[in-house]
Image 1 (cartoon, rainbow, N blue to C red):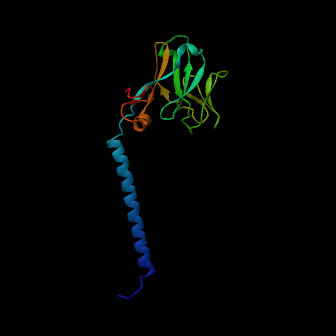
Image 2: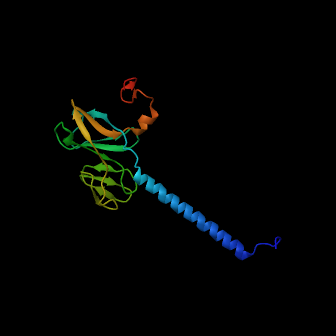
Image 3: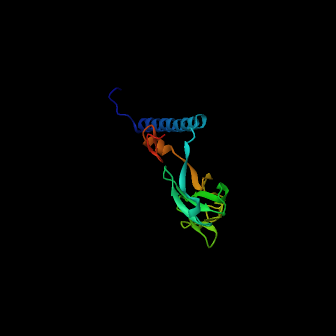
Amino acid sequence: MTGEQPTRRTFLGTATAVAMGGGLVASYGTFFAFAGRYLYPARPARTGWMFVRDVKGMAVGESVPFKTPTGAKVLVTRKGPGETGADFLALSSVCPHLGCQVHWEAANNRFFCPCHNGAFDAEGNGTEGPPKGQSLLRYPVKVEGGLLFLEVPMERIARAMPEGHDPCLGPGTA
């Protein structure tokens, strides 16, 4: 019986066993990948304070766009006439629903996402449309010496810049 051709039943049985084995390997691999992420979470991103602008040059109610070193888009708004961090609000200008760009509508006192008519109140909380119940990412702000600073992730800069190079001040200034 050494010269016999395999039957259809033998072929299908072998193919099924291989497919099931491949599925088990893939599912267990996925399980262990997620378990590894849970048991050994990534270290938190390194953050730093970046200069946004002079506080005196910004009117109450005015919003200015800001791009972080990692490429995230932030909208910084002046809420009050004082010169403390509490008088400013920095929110991501990316909608958490599908990642569309939101913009401030002063007439409606809200952030608006044109993709699906989503809206956020002045504090970044979702009030209408698909992002209702979600919030725009908030960034910490501070004012020192009349200058506005924003705390942002610096990971991309840390990997791209050589050791001893401060991206705000230049080479050899860290």
